[in-house]
Image (spheres, rainbow, N blue to C red):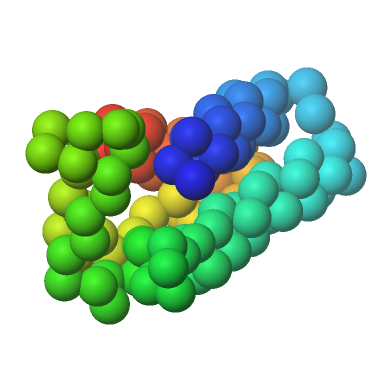
Length: 116
C-alpha cells in the first residue's frame, strides 16, 4: 500500500513541476490538475480502505498490529503502532491549476515524501 502511495506522490510531484512551467495555458494546467486530483483521491482510498484481517491499517483506529512476513514466527514479524495517515498523501486542498498552487503543492508533496 505504501509503495503505491509513494508512486502516486512521485507522479503528483511531476505534475506539479510540469504545471509550474510558465509556458502552459490555464487549460493545460486544468488538465494536469485532473490527473493530480485523481491520484490524491487514490491515496485517500488507500488510506480509507487498506485493511489486514478486517483492521484498518492507516486511519489510526488500530492501536497496534503485528504482521508475520516470513516463516519464523519468532523473528519474521513487524509491529505497526497507531498509524494515522488521514491527511498524509492526499494533500487536501492542493492543486496544480496555477504556478503558485503548483509551487505550494511541490512543497507539501516533498514533506509527505520525506515522512514516508
